[in-house]
Image 1 (cartoon, rainbow, N blue to C red):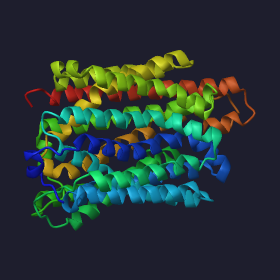
Image 2: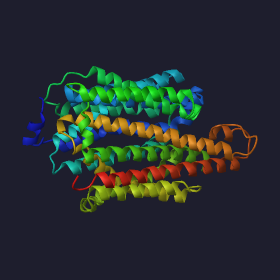
Image 3: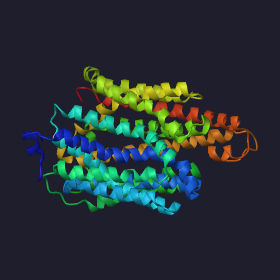
Length: 483
């Protein structure tokens, strides 16, 4: 039975909290996969004989598919139904995970990761869109807070789960674990989630979809090439130029076509623009910083994948406690002030990570990051989704996810490039290797190599901290209570 916005608004769905649990489960499997892979990289490299370029593409194939398709899949979920999108995305993601688990070559794993990215792109916009349909203005902030907390918990819990699986099973288990979860989620979605979609019948915007895919894939691909070729290379410049031309064409097309895929009028809303902009800056700083941290914990501090995962877990604990205890404080502060407070705390946590040559300051930094995200993320998501018509929630969620993915990719590339340059410059003369792993296995003094990496990481993380703080400043200006 199809539920329109108006029908859901008249009588709240009796199983809406159970449905929220299903939505959280659905997005959890996708979020977990991103961070689970980080701790599995050394085992995958050994098991498949994968080189540095292969490992990069195992990560990047997923990002390319996700960033390139989120806008289009968000619009399609609004048009054809969010429940259908959830089911299709879970099936695709589960099938891709099974293929990845039993991949026998780097090429096969890269292809499977790309397929998983397609599934994630189909799945993710529908989760927030369904939530918007089921909860009224009174209950929606609480529901979004739970969704945001579970999403962040999945991000932080990934290293723990991945480390435990790698310790007891083979590397493919980090992908295979997704399959039973996806099957369970498919059954729950089919049983509990009502169908909803935009009541307006809109023609598919084929031109807009093609331009957005070309633009976003080109931009993310350009960023991916930075660590290998640098910002001044043709490998970066050509796809960036293509991406900018395609996205400019997309914006012009959307402004003049009768039935645009994306209503650019969303950006005239200060709350929408503030939430998106601050989210991009936060993603830039946090994604890049946590990516470097996982290497630091294993390569410099010498922890196993499981030990590294356990040591990241305090961030998740702090996040859960904060999101469940400081709700009233956030309400009293107002949206703009709460975002500034939360993201300033996150920035302070990232800055502490930059001096984490031992674990205690790293622990303090992770706790601060968890507290800051617990304050800011529910506020940002509520501001974003509350600023657009509920019937267009899919495309709005897709746009936010697209720009956040781009911010994350830029964060990993830029902070990674800064780290690499500083690391190589700080290595003793004659030590080969452009990566920590290569330098550690070169026979050089281990302490000198680790000190060089720590030096490079500190400089990069300070840039990440500044980006997160700027996101809080942007939010404080645009997400005012009277916006």
